[in-house]
Image (cartoon, rainbow, N blue to C red; front, side, top):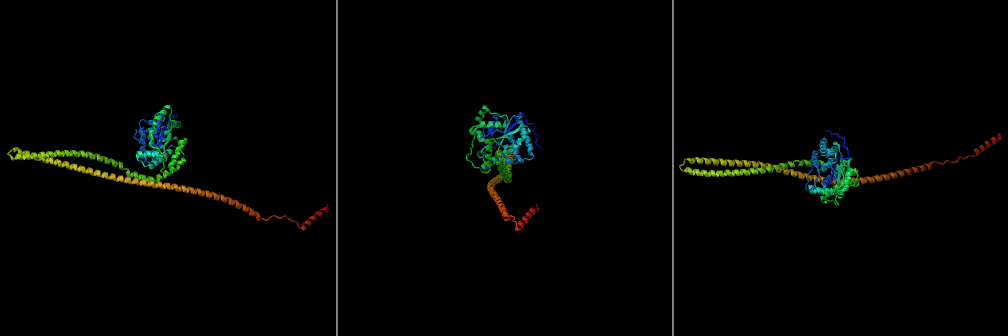
Length: 495
């Protein structure tokens, strides 16, 4: 299944979709609302406010529903600590989801102006939404919110009762997925604290970097300042310690990018991504087993609720049966009294007495039969419902016990893996230090070897020079001198 070709981009700097990305509880709602005040276009159908976010989420309801469906199709959900691997698990279904996302964007932004779309679930799917925006001729641009993971974890602990270690790992996975999926795109990293402390300068930087029709003027600044109340912030991280050794490096890389207005350092993020991939390889099968064990729990709860509701209806029927039985018993009592009266009257010579007695006896028999029939039907139906309720309750109890055992086992496995990862990191650092020492020792040995070779060469040259006998000057003997003198004399005489 192929992705539709991208149409020609719409002209002008406003032909863009601005995606507000970040981990849950990282200030994405405040940023989306602030960008809307600066001229960004929010969709009409938004997720309604809730007690944990009374000012509103500013999330498109259709986008949230589609993201939930995509995550479910990949065997995931919003709190999956391995969100960075979700898009890779979609396979051929990805093209269909891109088409649906493109239709959603097309319906929100018919004029080609800068729409603002925000949903933290999209942190797992940035590449998919980029493709959807381009499919309708709009450029995807991104503002990425980074907040201290300890503050995010504290908020999720309060709202979801999520373990702090899981919340921290979820933060890391979300930020890594966002960075990877928006790399090479037009984007800006914004620090949550800096945004709340100085919202107007932050929005001016966003408008300058992303365009999209955003404009910050005096009226905008007043509206943003009034909207961003200090009371909206409930959690602050002081000197927080991390559960995972790579969290600090990820936080530092994003904060440095936000501070300097630059791209996050991909090399600094690489070890965290590799470690998270290794953890996913180890933990993935256990998590899938756990999901399979608790998969039927909602269905069991639904069936139990239906049984409880049916039992309530059964109680109403039983009450009606009891009322009918009481009426039947009253009729039987009245029939018995009538029979006794008829018997007394039958004792007198009265031809009508026997007829009354027969009618009373027949009425009493019918009343008793009706009461017995109603009682048996009620007992049978009550027993059937009680048996079904007991069976469902037993199944639910067993599934909950399995889920609790699996959860405990997953926590133990996670703790063991975390310890193993820390030990592996320590061993890797020790090995790296040892390798560095060996490399230094090797360099020193090579230098010493070179010096020794030079010294040996010099000694060899000196030895060769010492072993060669020196040339002695040629000495003429007496006979040679005589012969030479004779030749000279002979030459003189001839002359």
